[in-house]
Length: 299
Image 1 (cartoon, rainbow, N blue to C red):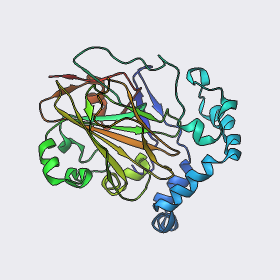
Image 2: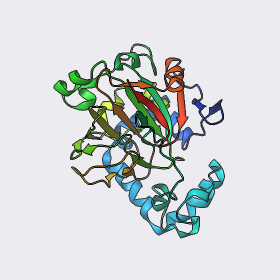
Image 3: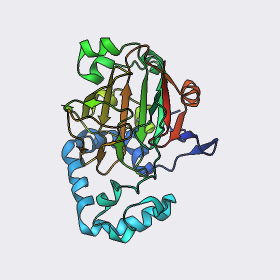
Image 4: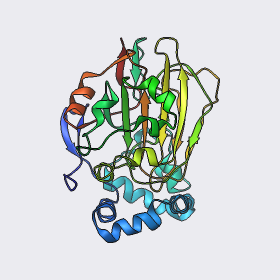
């Protein structure tokens, strides 16, 4: 199971696709061999390594990586606000903005939308997560949220795990309209959140650096928004203004270079997740969907 290809169901093509993993050979070496795990412990999971790599991706010379990256992963620049040659660095391209209307936001009053482009897992109850990546691994919600009392409030509520690959649009958005709190940093390490890593140790999710925001909404109660850093993520940047009302689909922030993830938490009895999301997650499969598309509706 550890070495199985990463596959997901594409909502738009209604087909199962195999992920082209950026740095796959490096990931399989570092998580699958004794010497790789030693390098992981000594270097790769340390914040300085990711900050150094992120700094490299800020340098003008890194622009040379953009064209080969676009070609290798079949990314078309039609939706970009800049032409590929206008980016000042690879990081500038990585957290690129998109043209207005490139990600339409579901306008139904009772809907919740995906906060990011990516591969998503959705569960009506966090207890269902145990065994998704590796059987026998427990899901530690108090450790993930860094607050036992808060975890108790969301125990039994729905959650959606959204995994962004390096090939994805790397800005994340508000899934609902509301009033967001100040972000709370929960410091930690920076390991990969690719299934290659999570299949071996789910605890990466609550060991990694993460940022938690509370979104107060009229219809859905208090929704928790958690961004999780990962190897080679140079930073989690928040662009919203705390305590100022936001619209559904408004930008919340962006990840600098590297694969990353977000988790959206709901209080019990608030939402019903989209059927294709639940069905694929039930079979341990991720659903590919883009920011602004429907991921849940109000109960």
